[in-house]
Length: 276
Ligand SMILES: C[S@@+](CC[C@H](N)C(=O)[O-])C[C@H]1O[C@@H](n2cnc3c(N)ncnc32)[C@H](O)[C@@H]1O
Image (tube, rainbow, N blue to C red; front, side):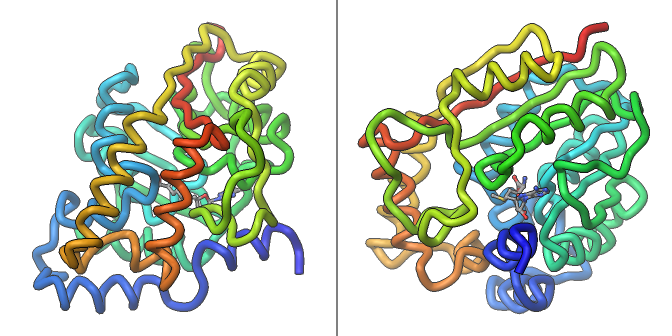
């Protein structure tokens, strides 16, 4: 099995869209009338979910009519949110084919198939022209990317001069090997965490400038603790990311929190620019 296939299998096997429809029905959501906002508990598949996407969007200079690229778009929730909020177009790309299928079906469901186009592919080799996009982002993707330099070079290549590039990830901390399973790996395989300073150096090597790094660990911890508390009270929502994380979701969330508390991971949000 290739590394790409192993990473894809880790994130989503089988008919992910059918699983989402099944849980929507259990949660009382009608596919004929469901909204972008109602999908958010599942399709913003990263630490803190929807609020983290909104905060990232608030910090980005996106304009109406822009064309953006979402590298590692998952189910396309962030892409649909940005396209709807800013009236822009988003091209999404993801290495997990069942996620791409679900992303395109969900976009069609909410009438956004023209605004968000997702395709299957690897962020280390983007199928787009040079200087094609006004901005790009990768939310919680790079933990699985072995060739970080290649990934950043490709992002740089497809962005127009002056475009932004935003990245959120769990960087490597100084507290020792992360506990597993975590969302991006069951046992450490397929995980390529880097210290934030090394990520910044790799972005600089790719040519990015004005690199701003924000520590997001404390906010992620609050999000994980809230989820752990709800689960302990038996009040976890029917329609949530456990649909994607599977049976080990409680342990995965506990480990993600513990890794931050013990300094084993160091989550960051990074925003930078291609020189104009
Ligand atoms: C935690 S999910 C985040 C999904 C989406 N960015 C979001 O925030 O909702 C990680 C995603 O990264 C994707 N991924 C991992 N490695 C990738 C690569 N080399 N190229 C493209 N996508 C990748 C996975 O398939 C998965 O959908």
